[in-house]
Length: 387
Image (cartoon, rainbow, N blue to C red; front, side, top):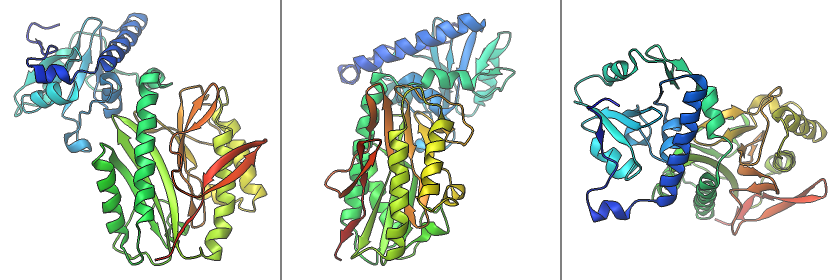
């Protein structure tokens, strides 16, 4: 690397040393080896990464976005022999003390008032460089990087399961304590609080009060008060990984139109969960889901909104499409979120060699056992509260 690259991989205090995750160190080293092999195989000198998903993947959960959601503050420049963080002096301390402590990264720094793009251009000049953006004359290899991120490793799945537990608990706790007359925005705020205090960043929140999802499948929330029932849905990011979950709560007996829509939606959800199996291509799963919509008398509903997404370090990197040839393998997570009228389901599952694992299982929540090919799938039911 350039002599101006500074090695900050070794901590300078016992406090910093105590934060080092040896499992994470090993995983980052393994992922660097994957990139090393890729560079050699494709005859590249280096790989430049600035998409948050790829930054999080290579660093084992670090982030390069200010505040967790706005523009990138730094990027990674990877060669066979070094992994370098490219950032301004304003971000250096945060990167090396918070995002990548003791993980073997080096530094290429610029003053905050000088464009980072100039430094990146200097690093790429005269070299054959791959990237996840195609900028600075580099080759965009985003699809190849997706192949490195998936399937998830045991390191990832441990964190995914933890993320699912936190997200499901936050949604269910928010629903259980809900009272009539709360605004959708208030409910969103309470859910955000429950997630953030456990390290989960809410990327997408939907508070669908009183059947609003019938007309607006991608509704978020506003100041409307919830009077009869509500679906709470969230996609959260935890240590770089994404999970999604949704639950529905009703004040008193659910109205007939909700119950009528909930039944086919639950059947579709159970079908999607069951058929998320290794070596199935997504269009094969889709054919089963579509048939369930038709058998349930809701044939037109699947056309109203998407049904599922592959979730990993990027959310929705592979959407479920009628003609998708993406092949599921053990270690691929999916967020199933089928909807019928006012009913929206939502759970994250992990494809494994032993069968599908629900990452966001209900806890202290009513379920509807649905049999698919002789296997019972517990689908979260409507929680009825008397408030």
